[in-house]
Amino acid sequence: MNRKIIATSFVLMTIVILAVPLVSAKPTSAANNPNSVSFVWHSENGGHIGEDVVKTNPPWAGPEEIIVTHTQATWGLNDIFNNYVQIGDDDPITIYAEDYEGSLYVQTVTKSPGVGALNYRVYEKVMWGEGNYIEIMCLERASYDENGFYASGTFSGHGVIDGQKVQVTGVREGYVNPMIGFVLDCYGTIRFAGNMP
Image 1 (tube, rainbow, N blue to C red):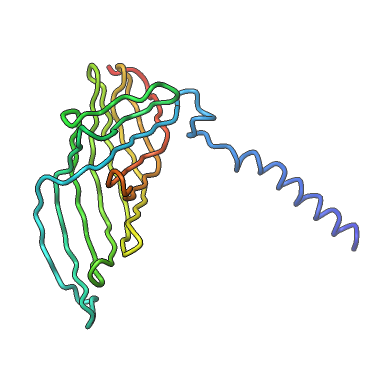
Image 2 (image 1 turned 180 degrees about the vertical axis):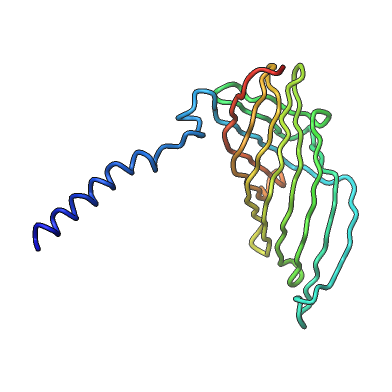
C-alpha cells in the first residue's frame, strides 16, 4: 500500500516538474520572441469632436431611473499635452494631433447622477515618419462615481514600421489625472512580422 502511494506521488511529481516549463513559457512575449519588443502608446487629454447620441430606457432597467446612452464620437488629441509611442528601448516618438485618427463607440449606463458605467470600443491610428503607422482597436469597460474614473481593457492591432509589417497586443488603462485630465495608456508587445511585399 505504501509503495503504491509513493509510486503515485513520484509519477505526479514528475508530471508537475515536466509541465512547469511548458506552462511558464510565453512564446508571444517580448522576452521569448526575438521579433518582439515592448510597446507603449500614451495619450493625454483627448476629447471628442462630434457625437450622435441616442437615449433608450431598456426593459431590464426596472423601476429605477436608469438611462442607457449610446454615443458615437470622433476622438482627437491635444498638441499641448504629452502623446507618444515607444517601441522597445527606443526614445519615445511624439504623436501630434494631425498624426492621429480616432473614433469612439460608447454605451453609458447611468444609475444615478454622477454614478455609472461605460462599455466602449475605440479605434485609433497613429502615424509618424515616412509611412510608419499603427492601427489598434480597444475594448474597454469603465466606471465612475464621486471617487473618480477608471477604465481598463485590451487592445490589438497592426501596422507598418520601417517597411516591416507589425502586430500589437496588450492591455489598456484610462484614468483622470487632476493636473492634466484624461490619461490613456496601452502597454503590450509589438511583433515584427516581416518586410512588406
